[in-house]
Length: 274
Image (cartoon, rainbow, N blue to C red; front, side):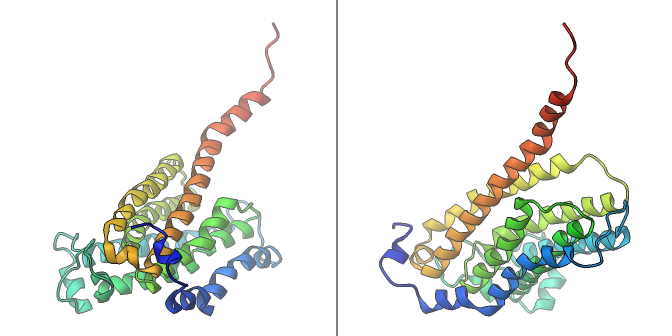
């Protein structure tokens, strides 16, 4: 089946139109464009070394713990917890874990209370992550295109997965929650004044996350009811477009941060006379 047949053979469905025009996601994501300017114009900007150290440590530790909890709860809902999440599953009221890549639409994951609780918490956390940008601005540091593109698009990716019932949402959730557990732990340690050279490793892990996600989510084109559904395919295509853009920006960042800076440093060194 042609990937775009769900769009070319019929007009946009009412469900898709409602999802794209809901005030919650429009206000939530476009408000990100105001975060930087408002913080920059506030009286809270403090460029001194160590400014906001305590608050940043608490924030990053909190996000690391949340990400770990989201990873574990998602793994439990999918039955990958090796039994350690039995109490969590019982607490949620789910009778059993869910299966993936079945020709059932909507997917069984959307009938799992634990999965949906994790998914919604994960979605709202993407707005909390706007604080990543706030900290940069308040400390007088520049906000990169990578940072802005990532934070503007992430809520849309999760939101569309939930609203349009794209089962592939689990891939973004479990991979991103794992990486964020590592990333925010590193940021907490660095903010506390104990930096260690793990930044290139974390960037490589993030790039690996995107490539792994690309591979895993491709399998949904082999699920007939998934490909036939306009909403699911829109969410699927958006995920590829958004994550693809983030991947390109991360690759550029990795090269510039690890090789471009060295070249510039060498170029600035005075040449030895012959």
